[in-house]
Image 1: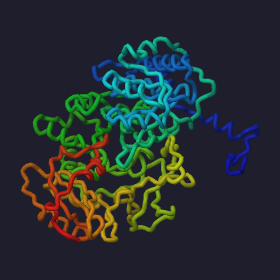
Image 2: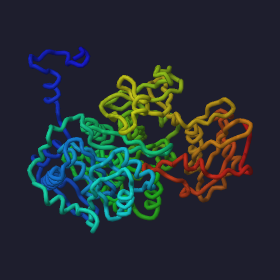
Image 3: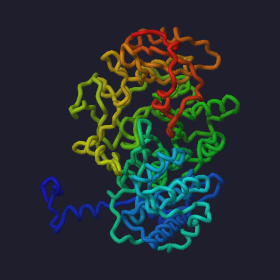
Length: 544
């Protein structure tokens, strides 16, 4: 074994590395077992219909499911996929897989057929669990040429094995895989949003998920409880589920952002964090405008929100006052988790300007800005964020090319461009791969969007590239404005003047209703879809 692969101490045992690995082994399955042992009667999960499941019962059912799957030939290294809305059984599948070393692909059920089958094909699941609402996906799988999994139905069907019947067929004893589960074994495959192509499957190990669980608690004030309304196929619910289990709290499951129920659950829960994303901000404020919200009823909250760069500053100010909680100024991703630049908050009652959106590094990871050749860039220069540390994913399943190009000596390049300030904080610029190259100049759309959204009459904006005979590409801004606003294109350009270089100004401006914007699961506008919208030359407002 090369020197660099050995521990830096001789413990007098035949294989020090293996010895240390076993001593430090701790898995997600053991996390649940510990809570079941220490707090068997404590409520682990509350379903949308108020059904409560204790830690003892959750652990027993996951043992049964794991053993039932083992009886059908699955073992460490097997693959399971879930196509379902939020429900307690989702957690059972994840914990059962953790106990015998399988990995779970969390499939976005909203995907089109091509995308969904692509996600399954790269994971090649042995078993696919499907809810009754998604039964047509089982037909897609059955008619696919390269997929042959067994299909299990959460709610039963004549064509598939019933989930509860499967669970009850298994022993309640702890499962015994052929070889022990390790902390570096893959547990979950979370998929990227696919806004620039087909989704990629990010592999997360037990170790990574446990570190992320800790990070959600440390930086997001998650715990001991959490209201999981976000899709469980996404990190915004999967990771807090483990945070809650780590703390022995209660995970309240809601299937989507049902405003009244989500607010009710937050009044019940003992949680420091209320997650909401850009796509649901208006729903909360609209509800608050028609109903009395008693701030005191949410006294456990310390922090709210996420993705502050994408939210109207006026709304951030109103929301922090509404809940008397600070707004989280975050930046993370499926691949690197919550921590990289999520160590800051926007104080209650603050309408954030550009300086308020600067971000500092969070815990449990290292951050640097690099150029195309992995060299660090100087302060004040554009650079791509690279991250190293235990919250970084293991790599993309079935995509060796991406793994070889995006990783280097333990660092992962995220594709997100930033500028580091002299005080060590970071300002987001845009995605590396989405540049507008206009007459030889590089224009990052997010720079324009931040200036646009700072206008009090603008509720949301997205900038895309459009072809141009003279300049190659030029920016076009799609803007939603307040219903009572008479904002014009000229007003927009006047607002931008002096705030950003004139060569970056949008050459086209079109006003649209906010509800027309296509969105990803996390509430972000899908820029690639907007780029496909038609362009009318009459909307051109200026030339570079």
